[in-house]
Length: 295
Image 1: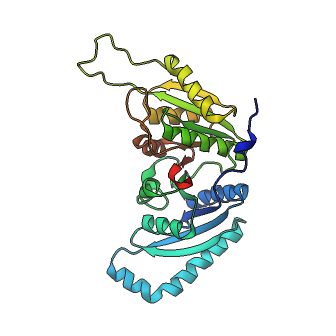
Image 2: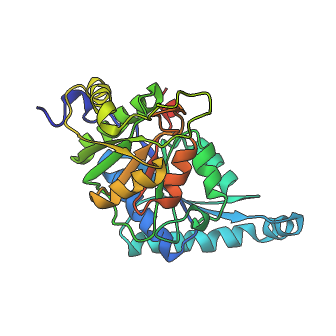
Image 3: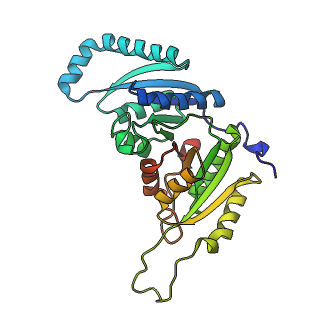
């Protein structure tokens, strides 16, 4: 079987990457991820520092000293670029929130991917850019890569993508396959059969499907989506987010590629709220794919 079909190679629509940074040590890891991806995809990298204006007084003071402040931060960004041998276009922005600044800048430069980092190994509440970064993951019109502080940077060698048999997850699966081809990486696919609470009106002998019962259906879904690309399939039972994160850790996957929407119900993975939980729980980078960005 052809591991990387020709039709999947060099087709990633990643030409411009925006890195949100606060110049802290943890954010440097996110920068290395962004740089590695930019090099592999021959993309332009922009590193942006956002100064948050908490009130009108702060905005007034910043108006007075903006050029001086912008110059100092610009010098720091230049020093970081030289220290880490990373090439990027520096930008210094100001807004009422880091989220707003990131989304506005992403639109301004036409970014295809936004990269943000976190302070801890896990925990979306400890984003380098503050709690507003959760809003970036949720509201950005383009894909977002969330990088935890301690994770090794790209290129990734083992990618894991959750699927729930919806058309939305099919698009994410195809996108993950293209990433795997571009990175020359192994592709893993996971489908989680979640425990369900059986309503009183269900037959007394109703039993939720076991993973083995849906394995063939999931495998057919994946094969139809990948057009001959090889993959490793995991069909498991348990809470969706924690099960996804556990298989990623147990099997040594170094990035999870997930979508933001999916079906919710028996034997289906709710990729909306599940994605947020995966980002919170995962000990590896999470690449949140937004299919609409490619249309």
